[in-house]
Image 1 (cartoon, helix red, strand yellow):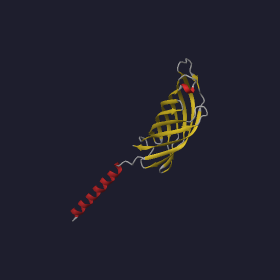
Image 2 (spheres, rainbow, N blue to C red):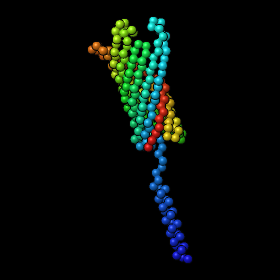
Image 3 (tube, rainbow, N blue to C red):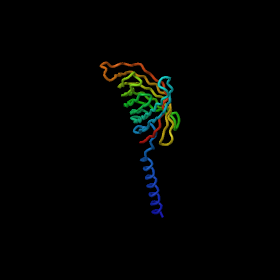
Image 4 (cartoon, rainbow, N blue to C red):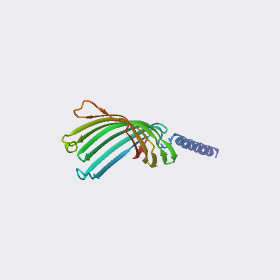
Length: 208
């Protein structure tokens, strides 16, 4: 009887120890913004606009853009931000294409379990090429290339739905450098000082 009771006690103690060890070794699930997590997202836009001109008549302009982005959290809440962008515009006797990368930092501050604010500061480079047809320039085609650098501040509110998120908020963009050149010209033209205030939207997912 004593032997059976001792065996039962040892088995119960071993089972409790194993259960405690399993619980201790199981890591807590990752949360949005934890070190080592990252987001993949971006924005896609397409528009068609119709204009009325007293000299050239009605015309349409088609434009589109894509802007993928990645945020990698190097510490809790603190992220390195990278994005790319490309766009086009066509119509009204002109066409434009452009692309460029952007780099910055951000910090995600939770406001609720699935809701937070994710301010970011970044620098963005853009290369653009614009062609204007002879009908709009008095008889000659004009090609223009440009190089610009902007500094931008974003303050999006981010709502999470499981592994997906949606971000909406204001963005202020200030052009700090711009050089433009028409083909055949030796001198570049500076256009510093351009600024834009707009609303930015982003969708994507987060991973660990």
